Amino acid sequence: MKKLLKLTFKNQKTALALQINESVDLSTVLDQMELQCTHPVIVVVGGASLMSDESLARLRLLFVEVIAPLAQQLGAFVVDGGTDAGVMRMMGQARAEIGGTFPLIGIAPVDKIALPGCPHSPVADTLLEPNHTHFVLIPGDSWGDESPWLSRVATALAKGAPSVTILVNGGEIALLDVSENVKAGRQVVVLAGSGRLADEITRAVRYPEQKARECISQLLQKGHLTLFDLSERLTHLSKILNQKLTGRGCDDART
Image (cartoon, rainbow, N blue to C red; front, side, top):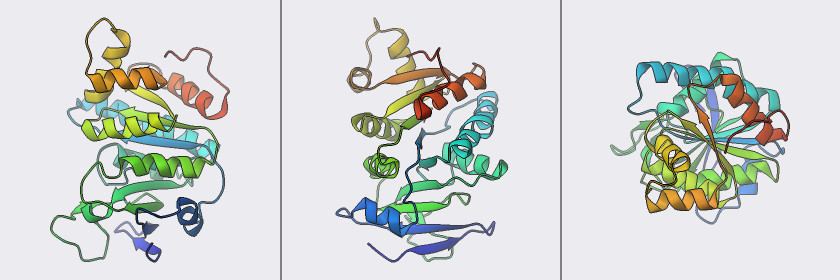
């Protein structure tokens, strides 16, 4: 485990970052990053590719009006992939827009990331999202290497507190992310209507008579998946997430 870094972004926001190795004790990492307390955890996975302008606007609203305020209200940890793209950018911007103070922790492969103000190789050219507060830089040089670490870090942060994963859109990397979170026993809320993987899972849930990919069928067998349609009232999603993170506030979540 390397020395704790303090990153400064162009927007003058700062974040703590730590590069870890395979054998690291995550509780030690979290202590070093001052993330010791027990709080609910929200894991955000997926992407925003091939979405219509209308759906993207709806999704941004969802982050600003539901996910970020709920994280703030509950003092939750939010964990995602940390890069300046897709839902990770939306999560960071939503935190900034509401003036949030909740920890926002990005997990990314160290050999894919360009740290602000630091030299980097041509292949390590992906920028970090500048409104995150912490980054755990995991060993790896390929997207997907971070998938098991997203789940492990979320579990270590929760320390037994409730946690939930939100799937937006997504492709094959998101499938790995969801699989790892299901393996950890984490409930998954799938945003139906957000496209790609989320819609593939939605079809498999709603139309079980139709043949789904084996990996999707296994998810449905092993995981507790809740569907929320992007066209529904956002207050319904707030109730679903609140119920999963506190045990209160939702009588009509559909699984």
